[in-house]
Image 1: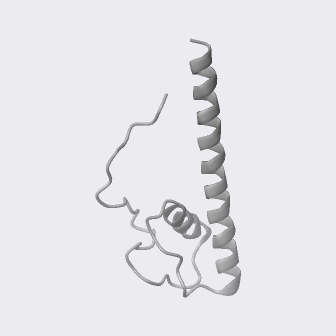
Image 2 (image 1 turned 90 degrees about the horizontal axis):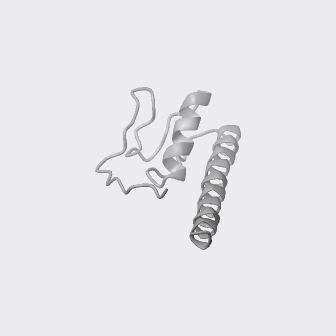
Image 3 (image 1 turned 90 degrees about the vertical axis):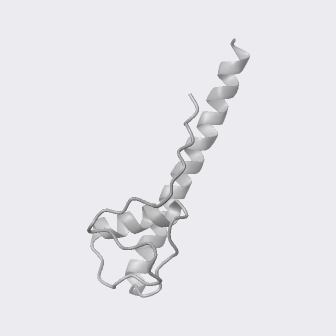
Amino acid sequence: MPRKFRPQTSPTVAPEAPNPESAAAPSGLTAEQLARWAELIAGGEAHFPGSLGRDQQRHLLELVRQRRRSRLVQFIARAIAQEIWRTHE
């Protein structure tokens, strides 16, 4: 079943999450904050912050890659499933 389009006027941000409007994020983010940044960046809602330490930049980059890869795999799987469903109707 295809997902329904939901227009989003502004991203929902948890109180502890970084502000996607800011150009830079504070260094020393927690794992939860890095995960939230990764979700925002992978979804195109925020830019990659420039003020992180080298280790956190690498970790955040890997988290973003994982999320994008997962979304791509899900997209392809849904497309294949729809094609199979159509051919059996």
